[in-house]
Amino acid sequence: MEKVILLRYGEIHLKGKNRGFFDNQLIKNIENVTRKIDSKCKPSKVGGRYLISEFSGENLERLVSACTKIFGLVSLSIATKVPSVPEKIIEVLNDILSNDEFDLQFAKSFKVDVKRADKKFPIQSTEFERELGGVVLDKFPDLKVNLTKPEKTVFVDIRENGSTFIFADKIKCCGGMPVGTSGKGLAMLSGGIDSPVACYMMAKRGMKLSAVHFHSFPYTSEQAKQKVVDLAKLLVPYTGELDLYVVSFTKIQEEIHKKCKDGYMITIMRRIMMRICEKLSEKHGFQAVITGENLAQVASQTIESMTSTENALENLPVYRPLIAFDKIDIIEIAKKIGTFDTSILPYEDCCTVFLPKNPLIKPKISLVEKEESYLDMENLVNEAVENLELIHLS
Ligand code: ATP
Ligand code: MG
Image (cartoon, rainbow, N blue to C red; front, top):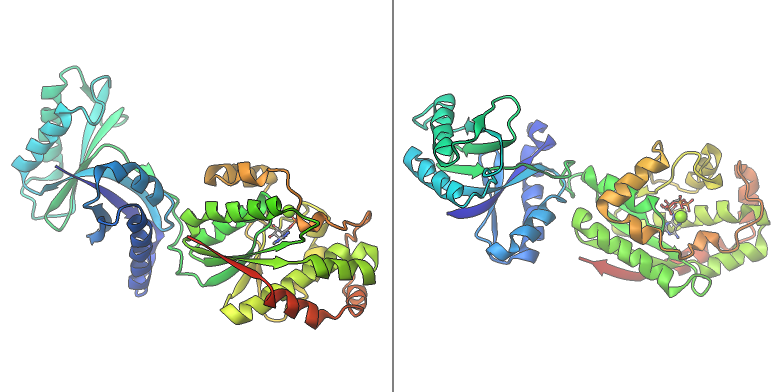
C-alpha cells in the first residue's frame, strides 16, 4: 500500500490560456518546499490534482504541514494509492479497515463517496459506493449509513491515469495564487503585528516578496533587529525564500532631528523610507511597496499622512492590503500564521526613536518639502542603500 499526499488547487483552474504558467509555478513551489523535507519525494501531476509520492513515512507529517502553507492549494488528503481495478480497491480498503486507519471503530455513521473521473472504470459511482459500503459494514456491523450527515466519509477518487486514491479527510490549505505568478514586491517589515500579516496577504495573491527593515542601532537594540529576522523566517513557509534588506536609519533620523521641525519627524522619516524603497526597486525590479498600514490606526495612518508619504515616490505604487481591516481581524491572521507571539515581544521600533510630542496628523506637502530642503536628501538615501545588510532566508 503506497501512501501519497493528494493536493487540490483552487483558483488557477479558472485561468484559460495562461493556465500552464500558473501550473508550472505551483509545481515548482511544491518541489522547492518538499525537496527540503525529503530529497527523495516526487511531486507530479495526475489529472486535476498534484501528487506527492515516494517519501519516507517519518516525513509525512512535516510534508503535510508544509503543503498546507503553499499558496494555490485549497486542500489535501493523505491517501492510499491503488490501481483502478475493482477487486484491488476492495482488497486495499479491507486492509485499511483492518488497521482502522479511518477511526471507524467508535463512529456512529458513515458514507462512501466515490468520484469516477475515469469513465472507463467498469462500475458506476453509486453502484460502487453501495458495494464498498457493504465492505465497510462487514468489518463494522454497528455502523449506520448516513448519506446526508455522516460522521465519517470514506472517499474513493478514481482518477484518469489508472490510479485510485482512498482517503478519509480533506485538510484545508491556504488557498490563494502560487507565489511567483503576480509580480515582485518589496514589503516594509517592522517588528509589529501588521506588516507580517501584510506580507502574508500579498504572497497569498501570488506576489514574490523581498522585505526591507529600517533600524536605528544603537537607539534600537540588536534584539529588535533579530525579532524582525525571526518574523521574516516565520514568513518563509508562505513566501518561499526571502531576501531581507536591513537598512541603518540612524544617521537619517539624527539629521532630521537636527535640521527639521519636531512635528515633521515621522512624516519625513516615512517619506525617506519610501525613497529608499524606490531606490531598491530600481535596482532589483520590485514593482510595488507593501506596508501594513491601516486607515485610522495611528496618527501616521490618516489619509493625509499616507498621501504625503506616498507622494515621496516617483514611480512606484504602494499596496496596503490591511487598509480596511479591524485590528482584531489582523490579530486573528497573525495568530493563525504564527507571527503574533514574536510580534508582541517588547522591543522598540525605529519609529519610536526621537518621537515628537505632537506629531502632525495632517501634514501639508508644501511645508513638508520645505523642511526636507534642509537635508542632503540624495546623499542620505544613497548612503543608506550602499551600506545595507542583506540577509537571505530560506
Ligand atoms: P506594524 O504593526 O506593521 O509595525 P504599525 O501599526 O506599528 O504597523 P507604523 O509603525 O505606523 O504602524 O508603521 C506602518 C507601516 O510602515 C508598517 O506596517 C510597516 O509596513 C512600515 N514600517 C514601520 N516601521 C518600519 C521599519 N522600522 N522598517 C520597515 N518598515 C516599517
Ligand atoms: Mg510598528
